[in-house]
Length: 241
Image (tube, rainbow, N blue to C red; front, side, top):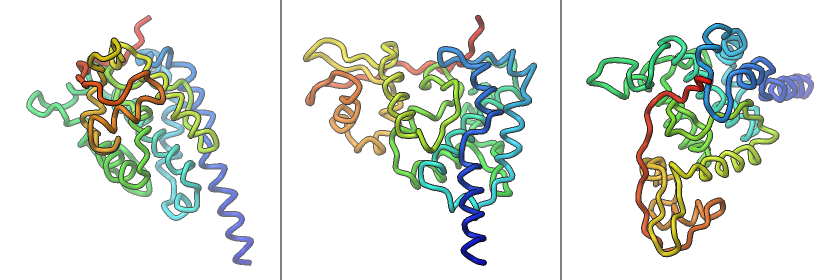
């Protein structure tokens, strides 16, 4: 009997871990070239809201039964979906940093807008307590999108535990190919990288040298190059076409 119950729980968790059609459909319809049609999404948020409502009901015990990649994919999706909903709640707005008072530009990340496991948590808590220290996966910084143009591009599909490694590699490739953010420059000259690598340097080995080694899989750089940081664009990652 106990074995049968465990089998049912595992089967349930495997199905729940897969990206739902409602989130996939919302992203496919409203994300183009890594940017978001917020006006269109605000008119028709049903798919996004349905996924968030289902995510809010996720049981912590059931969640723990999922595989590592299923859990990480779910939490990345949750961060991105909750950020989209936060922007919609304040739209039109031209930067996530304008949500809240002018004297606190980080207010958006301190609001309890993420509902999961029977409680409400902040975007900061989700990233810095539930994702980064638990999974130790530096490529999440290419997948978590804070609604700014300086962020990596938002995928037009949800993350899927069964394909997560390939999706994260693809995100790294896409982000590091954006020359306004990351540029190998001329041989022997400085490499210009997104300040994401400076803010989260400890996740990439703790030094500029380790950052260079990490990005060299996708960006043609050599050891010993000087590193400079590009400017971060906090304007909304909006597709206005």
